[in-house]
Amino acid sequence: MTEPLLYRVDDGLARITLNRPQRLNAFNAELAEAWAEATAAATHDTAVGAILVEGTGRAFCAGGDVIDMATTMGGAGEDIERLAKLIHSGIAALVDAAVPVVAAAHGTTAGGGLGILLASDYAVIGSDSSIGSRYANVGLTPDLSVSAQLAVAVGERRALQLLLTDRMLSAEEAVAWGIAAESVGSGDAEANAAAVRERAEQVARFWLAGAYRAYGQAKRLVRSRPSRSFHGQLDEEARTIAAAFAGGEAQELIAAFAAKSRGR
Image 1 (cartoon, rainbow, N blue to C red):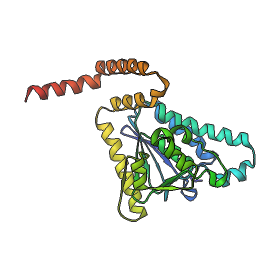
Image 2: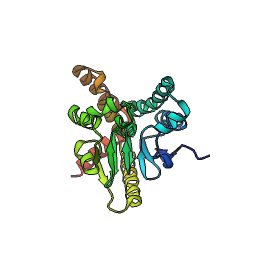
Image 3: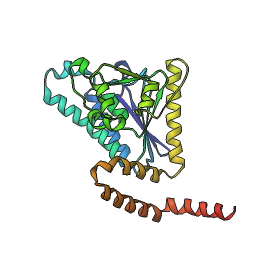
């Protein structure tokens, strides 16, 4: 049986690969379980300095596998709620962790896949990618953090445009709206997918080659801001920079910067 998710750590990079290409990497119970386990592993491993989320096949993620859910769960709302909460635990782990996350989102991203994309801190998409909500097309409501993260990323009015229509954004629109950081690729679908994965890994390796702990803390400060008042955020910034200044990573880089400055 093919594993629904692939997970490996290589030189500080944790790679989480959604692996249900025949269903556009849509979540069923097995993928949800594997997702929760992999995200917990990646965010608790002190050897991990960056996380990359990607998908196999011709799409990044089509959200939940509603056909599988209808077949295996019928109309049991409690089963759907349990499944959503399981996937949510993995999304929360990525968002809360002081580790930067990059998404390689080639092809189509729809429904809950949009929430997975928004859980990343830097998203790379293909020039042929399309991104949308489409929950209401099957009579469902947003989950997988879409209602929590989409308006923060694009603004309330634009979020409602996606949620209340069946519109799919082009790659150019997704970048302009702020859902993705950049789009890459100019060939066929397979070439675009390869370009997206390559660029996403370049981003992750850039973090790892530099002050990856500082990048992680910068991400944490921004992501956790809603939980604090303005003055509380200032206090947290002061505490965080003090801790960073006393750490070995900053001490080494500051010493190198000082030596370079003296040589000018």
